[in-house]
Length: 261
Image (cartoon, rainbow, N blue to C red; front, side, top):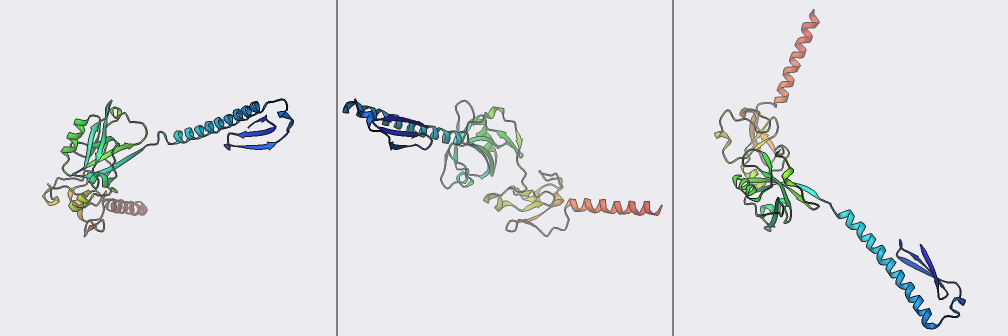
């Protein structure tokens, strides 16, 4: 808080409130001053008030900028083909989404132009690979026959993708299926909830096929109802129930044996 007395008036300046108050004090301070000098002093004081208000406003704006700067979020989505997006090379390394088609699969999944691509699906399996070089990333995307998993960074500072390690894709259990995957989903693993939606019919798989998520054998799969999200008419209980029953029977048997001794 600062104050000044000019031309018989006391003006108090409050930078925090961006305002000033005016109160009459004494009239005798103008004595001995010319009218031109009095006007000049009043003008200088109001110029100081204006600078104080502008400095306060600038400080507030800097605080708002500091709160918003660096705000970023990581988005993970699975996008059906055709993707409906264009990728470009970032200066200094990395891949960025340069365009997204309106109404396309990428737009429906929530991807936007300007998103930095951190990971995409690999050539094979459920592994995710860092999107370091544009050509390598495009080749990996082209190798996926149906859908591509993306991990992107939106807002804030760029991520140094060269330092990112490979990482496994998130478990299928609990993941929302895309529309194309729903159309192909036929079987579900009873042990972990993995949903089989690949183009090759499940019945044509070898008997040695195992769940890619929990390694359960093929017989642990049941037909899948897309509308209810539940298995259809499975006659085999979950493996956890079987193990529990075996453990329970063993415990009862041990109790009887030791109880008779």
